[in-house]
Image (cartoon, rainbow, N blue to C red; front, side, top):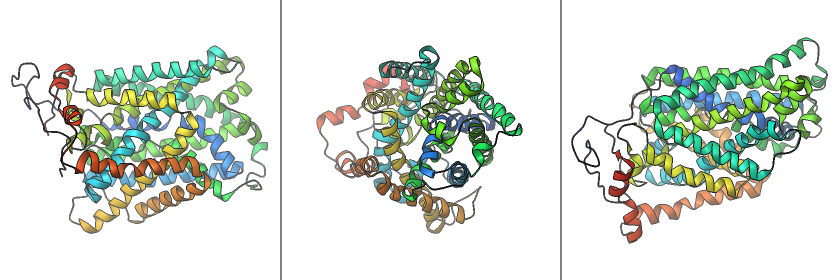
Length: 488
């Protein structure tokens, strides 16, 4: 499917060197994502800042220890339903791009562009900024303990972390994936450091915080969507393998297996981690803590507690790395530029390193701008509204394609109730949150509406300003960045 291009294509030579035009072998994104690497990408992206940020938000909005654990499990099951739905979409629509590609196939370029627009200016940069801010805070925690970390120091450390991840993803696909595997095992070790002592305390009989676990005197039903926002944020990442479908070996087998194995591991880890928290901290102590993992370690590990923020920072760095690995190939850059909804240069890859260098470079200033304009909580709230609204739309697209294109090959097919339950829950959660938190979710809704005039200005109208036409041309950028169009 093609739509009106931003500018006239000027690919130089589809197979050649941008300097000489000499023919070379085909340049394409290599299939380097195996089952193990796929699992590491998903787990590495899911387990990060969320498990250390979300417990407080879930407990606060669910009203009790027992209900908070129910929300954690429910969010895990809901995420599994979403992941299985995306496994079907990813194996029947074998294109990178995730949400954007599925909406494009189901509902056409107009709706897909709105998703692209929201991704580009809000969801992805804000999501990366939130993880990076958590990294900046925790990496500095051992230096400033027991004092608080200055905000300017957090911003500077965050900027350095983002720059490191951007550089890594610009240099090598293989090294990015290898480092991600290492960081995935590192963060699982960090989770184990919390789970093992916590379960030891549980077996010793430390269960007083679980007494009357389902007292809900303080629960407010309007707060449940915000509790689910926190939980779903912690699980967010199950969809990132779908962004790199074209780089997955044997996607019909690899994607469903990687998704299911990853989600089961994450659900077990998250539930056991929260049980461990409650063996050491009461509900009141957890709500009073700004860094749950650090408070847990201080109460249980003594001097060794200094190491915990370092492990948390490694966990967040792994999330940034896995997140950017997928983002740089996702809808708002790589695939969308091939569809003509972004300048074509963003779909090109480096002639030697085979990495999508222009896409990574474009994301860098947008992320830094959002980083310095917002704080972690405001970014999290309006990003969650937009994220789950459009993921719900993408899964509705699966249901729609079942009826409009019944003959489409589907190597992996889920029972219809799974996408129905998932999409209904997403919409219910999103629209109820407009009542629960009208300011932040209202900002997100307003941002999504700006995608409609943007589509007509940048895509639909054939006559565009001269400055915009120059921006759409890629000859000089292609030579400077040493990138060429991919072949498929």
